[in-house]
Image (cartoon, rainbow, N blue to C red; front, side):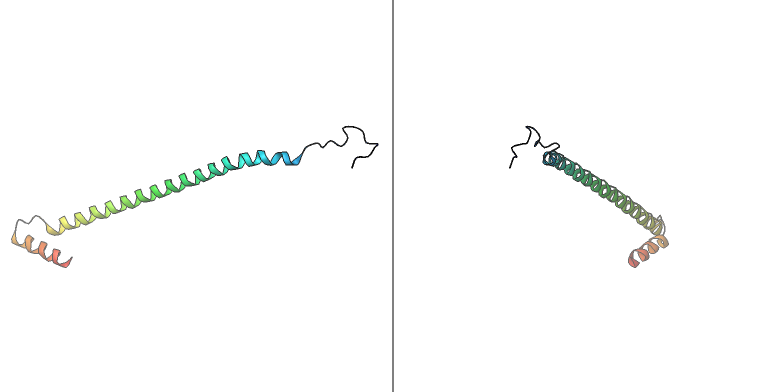
Length: 92
């Protein structure tokens, strides 16, 4: 209730704290979207890097296994080489 002695304009509020809420709310959504996109991009990068490393490891294992088979089977120019290759194949 206003006093009869109050001067005009003295009940005016300065720096309304409620005026900050809409501005912060407007900034919060794009900020959270940016953080979310950054997090998603980082996770995708880490997963792609992990897949690439697994792929390289599997390729190295495959090449080593192929080299082992080539060494085990030999040239197969003689009966002894063929017998050794069959023995090696049966062990696996």
